[in-house]
Amino acid sequence: MTSALARANASAVQRLTLLLKLACGETAPIGPAATRAKAEAMKLVRHDDTRAELANAPEQVTAMRELIQQAGLAA
Image (spheres, rainbow, N blue to C red):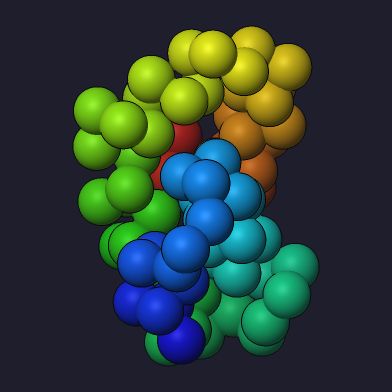
């Protein structure tokens, strides 16, 4: 499911939001699915397209930052 979300025909921000919600346990229980969602989210964050899309939507950066912290992906 997580790999399908990562490659879905949706904007990078939408895909990242769904993966982060999975990773922090909002849409699925914490466990293997959350772990896979974290990995897919990190892959997606590293893409230049995702970064560019987030740069063009500064209002969504705050929401993403909160989800990243909840998922335990913040440095």
